[in-house]
Length: 77
Image 1 (cartoon, one colour):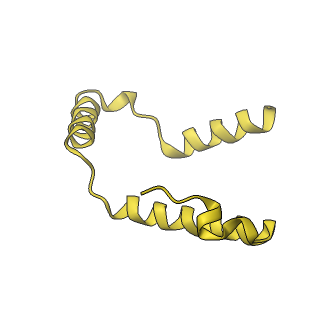
Image 2 (image 1 turned 135 degrees about the vertical axis):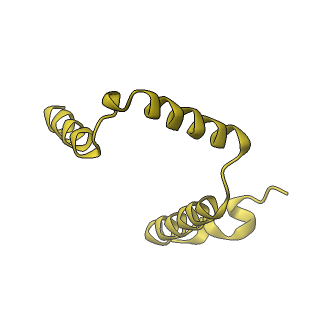
């Protein structure tokens, strides 16, 4: 059932209140997603990647290196 912002009275809220509500909705969605177990396809992909890493551990990139590269690139943009 689709309900519009008018049906819910959201259109009568101030911009600040609507932003706060949007954040609250987003947080509730994120919490629900975190509590949802991964599907079969995601589990299979994780297992495939683990097996690949086990076969060639030298190809793994340290998290600190990834983060450093991302920060460097972000600062350059």
